[in-house]
Length: 226
Image (cartoon, rainbow, N blue to C red; front, side, top):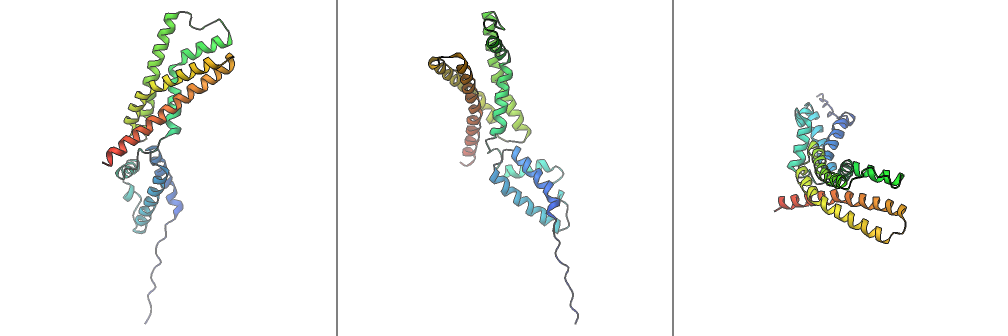
């Protein structure tokens, strides 16, 4: 009796799946998924894609017509999105927003440093108006920029992060001011004082979005686990 040879099982070329997996990891990173969760979700997606290929189906069977939305929803359903601190995104955005809002003040201080006794703004009233306007612009621009970046990536904590940042920016500004006053009190020379003041101010504003994001993710996660 002749034996019937069975066809070998289909093998999936992982090389063909790599672009999809890279896209998935990028999508999840922008959605605030932690690195460990991204690895786990990536393994699950790989298994789903392999199973679909073995069944003769296309990747769209798993990812649908809009893979980005499907991937975000997948992470959101497992409560994995919006947990990462996103320091590399939020800190630069906050610092740039503060710099943009304070551009006139920075220009004035630079002119006085290069040419002593020659301020860019000569009127005290105008100077106070510029300080107030710069403060308001920085205060509004930083949360808005952070919200836009997070929202564009599909991060569900975008709004809460922006609210916490809006509330904490004055704290960061006061902290920077107190540190600058302390440094000015103990400093003997003007040159190092200006450099140290710039560093402490940047550090205070850089720490603010990190704390805001931490509070936003911590509050939301606690609320979900009740």
